[in-house]
Image 1 (cartoon, rainbow, N blue to C red):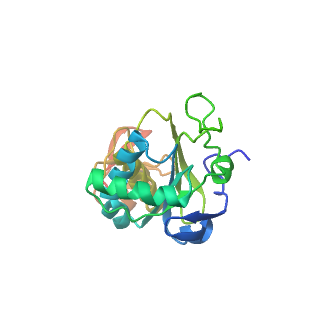
Image 2: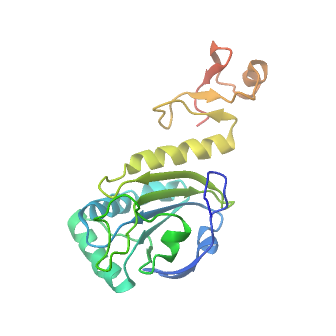
Length: 217
């Protein structure tokens, strides 16, 4: 299965540190971030999970579920979480999928095919650093893939969520380096005349194809 933007996120059943789940039931009516980690007790992953735990309130305020995945079993995950909390001064509460058999990793095409050192003792590949943002309709809206050696920028993931949620609510797109609260772009499908009616804060016409308006919120 080739996963693209617009694909339905594959459903699966899995054990997690918060109990067994069916993924579509876990998503429910919320946005969801699924992100993979090569293995437990690895340095980059430990910093990443600490960052996400520290940002839990930011995800909650956007009504976003967060779920991690690592290619180890539940016992290892539980011990690792204690380390993550101690090192980063956090209280990690989101679930982490136990994917020692790589079933979910294979389903989402997250296994490493580049780094020959990113393997377990049996030579089975660990995952790369994949991110999937999935909307309440179970549609994949963003896919990011980082090499195992590079930690992710979770402020960027929050920024994309803000853009996607705003674009679903209003007929807008967001410019490069946009941050929540910055001016947005009137969607190309909206005429300038219509834009002036539906965006009461005003429309700035830079070019006929580039119209800016203050963020709706």
